[in-house]
Image 1 (spheres, rainbow, N blue to C red):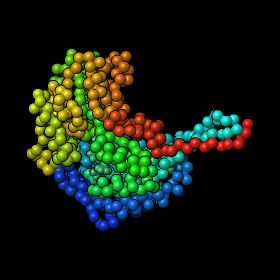
Image 2 (image 1 turned 180 degrees about the horizontal axis):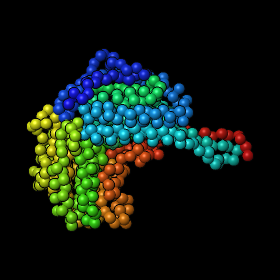
Image 3 (image 1 turned 60 degrees about the vertical axis):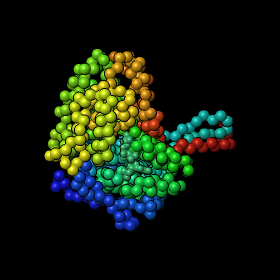
Image 4 (image 1 turned 90 degrees about the horizontal axis):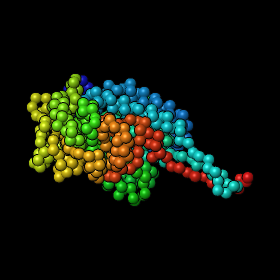
Amino acid sequence: MTSTMTRRDERLLVGGVWREASNGGRFDVTNPATGEVVGSAPNGTAEDVRAAIDAAAAALPAWRATTALQRARLLRRAAEVIRERVEEIGMIMTLEQGKPLGEARGEVEYAASFLEWFAGEAERTYGEVVPPMNAANRVLTLRQGVGVVAAITPWNFPAAMMTRKLGPAMAAGCTSVVKPASATPLTAAAVLRAIEDAGVPKGVVNLITSRDSGMVSRELFGDRRVRKISFTGSTEVGKDLIRASAHQVKRLSLELGGHAPFVVFDDSDIDEAVDSLIASKFRNAGQTCVCANRAYIQRGIYDAFVAKLGSKVAALAVGNGLTAGIAIGPMIDDRGVEKADEHVQDAVLRGARLVTGGTRLTGDGFDGGSFYAPTVLDGVTDEMLIYREETFGPVAGLTVFDTEEEVVTMANDSIYGLAAYFHTRDYARLLRVAEKLEYGIIGANTGIISAANAPFGGVKESGYGREGGSVGIDEYLDTKYICIGGVGV
Ligand code: NAP
């Protein structure tokens, strides 16, 4: 499958120079659909991280002195260049991450949309003139970029999770050091090449790839010039970063794990709800933080729902994401497959019924890759692992419920609070339930909720801070208050 694209050996980007790691080290990048090596990236060192911070700090004064309009124009141009390269970047993403090419193209478009959205927000970082308490004074507020920021991003959306941070950072006049997941450094480099080719000045964005994420994080958290770190990834690592941030009281935003409930009330259109659950659950082989992980179906429609979902999921085509017609690609690696299988085996052992799937896929077209069959489990209960933990795989577990009150309690029974979904045609219920769900994002009658113009983020152990929307830029701005005395009346 690599025949359609030559192998890519990427470099670090430090101060506008694409270069090797200081010790020449590299690591391989593999295709999760085949196990083949598709490229490599530099294994950045502590010296490289410091050089990237130096470059970001050196570029900061000139960048923050640009006007919002200049930054907005560059962001719009960068979005255009990313879109012009949708085929190239999409192909790189499918090769290193596995998602079907159509989904990869969609993510490239989604990644570009963050730069475009924050181009608009750059021009709206207004301060205020506040009526003074003392008549002789004048009171103003300014909103200024925080300075050098660092972005640590995951492999599941290797382009969009990066631009969701770089867009507002650049718009706010900040310079950045990016550390992508070591599974997907090639997409990150391709996106940064597009941003650079759009004319963004040297040093405004810098890229460090490394297998030693602990070392990168220590360097970033230990350097006083880095004023803010934005992280998207697991709750476990997020908690480590909260501890690390205490030392220098580093500003942090955290987009962490999720465990989304998906509720279907019996007044719903069953076919619509089935399609919506499939879109939410099986996109990216179930490897999204907003994937439904617990489906609650009201008793009156439970059997019909299970039957329709089971037959549609059994028909989903699994395979290499470069093959036309594939709905579900590989999981990122074998650890992902093992975790999904552990959740399925545990559920079956505790009494769940396997409706479809439930096995690792092997044989022709699957050997060498990390494939798991799209799976539906009926009769999931709160003693099962899948009910409590993020599966991060193509497994839908179904639970029956009777009343609205009961299901809201069950849906909120989680340490996570990122996304929740429900289907109903009763609009009074729609408002009541949306208000009661303890989640940062609610999908009502839809399984697809992500967009650049909406504030994305969670409550509880899903993190803090919001990305996207009109509030997304606030994470990269400090509010300064200026009190001018003796002006008189
Ligand atoms: P992860 O293991 O936490 O990794 C995320 C990033 O952190 C990667 O760049 C990783 O680098 C790096 N990292 C790992 N250990 C680190 C450490 N000790 N210090 C600093 N950085 C470290 O998560 P993942 O498996 O890539 O991503 C899946 C998780 O992300 C899921 O829990 C998912 O729900 C969550 N997620 C959340 C959102 C959201 O918006 N809330 C969006 C997408 C994903 P290496 O790859 O090099 O280890």
